[in-house]
Image (cartoon, rainbow, N blue to C red; front, side, top):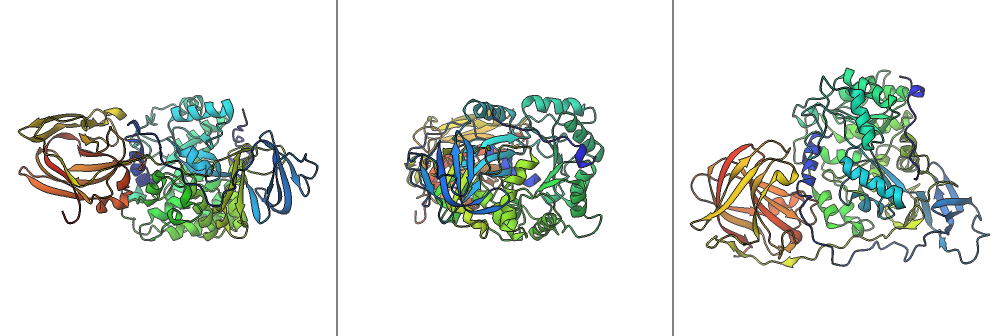
Length: 623
């Protein structure tokens, strides 16, 4: 279908990684557990203005990047949540009591737009304090989406980035996307795709996302949609006035998405470099008029041979704004072998060629996959786009005007009179050095100043090394059964103390993508209150098994975003001593200063199990 015949993206005014998803699916395993309130002092950005104004104000004498072009020495006037005036001397006639912000040596930009996230929890607040004022989510729980849209319609939700989303994605039974703890109505041979799309629209989906992923990128076959079904979904989306975008994991899948008429693609591929030529992916994408969201931030971590690190956790400008959960996310790694021939260099080269061919390239991070985090990773994405060959101004357009155009957000993405006053003020000139976007001076959402400070971390109770339990007495309140039933699973478990030994028996059943059942211990004063185990090096215990396994020791932290750090252990029928080192969990983002729970579990292998545990101890070197 020619581009001109496709529906315009829905306007909103006011009122692939298969492996990545398998890991990110763990993010919400324990989201329903209670978490304590934050109590300690928040860390603020060193470069932030002391008290940026809200409401009616002006930024004067500033370098302006308006979403496409650079203007030197202009004034930008804000009133009633919108841009009121732009130009040299535009603030000259304002009353003296209207606050002015000196823009000398600074650059004003539209608020950034992240064109690929999977949002949940505090994602939108995390994004906003890094200058990402709008998030384009590519798969989330419709309930979460509905709640955020309701808040946006009510009062603009000033403390969080605006959210637009595909909602539920289109995939087949057992395909990519079904591994999450979200009910996904999969598409089979009998599915009426028009009715399926209508259901997504009724749920609030702003566009339709189609999964084209056969698992080759992770070396594990996955069922996926075929060409005929892809084309039918695209056509159905267009009939319902929605654009359709395709998730791809390989060059073959990218071509298949183009064959089906997709309006945009998310992820470039690692398996080959898009070479030149009339039938190349780049040439076909340019001819089709599609846009592409490369998601280089996540791909650089997926290529295990690259040895790359975003550096965000150590960036002097961004690190003060990162909370513990975000730092843990940046520290996580995929931990899977990279298939032969898959190289991050291919993704960089393809992205550069797409931009050179005139294909709209959009900045998106795929947060919160391992190695990424909400908000901060968008600054890394800008840097990687420049590394791929885009100019700094083109990279900035990829995070502002380009996604606004691609997704039909006509009220943002640019700085011009009548548009939303979503603004980012930075020290320096990101139009020549794109990393200057990290030097945040002020952020405004609809004219309201955003606090540039990380949220306070929960206060943790210090726990010293020593014995935890020898089970010479009945279980106390710090021990409890734990299963996937809290996430809709069907696994079962029973705990009992018999002859001074903890008996853990149950059955791990299908019904949840990452099933588990076992015993949970809370080291803090109350369940899920954080405990500081910084003085502890390992968890030691004796174990034996009457069947089932292998088992896992999992450690939850207040800063881990619900993702447990985990290692397997395999006891025999006779007693064995195990010692799970915190150092061995470090690459999974374990924060020993914020431990909320430790679990001994069966799963994800299905079946009945029997586990005995005794002499649990927190150990330290020299003990």
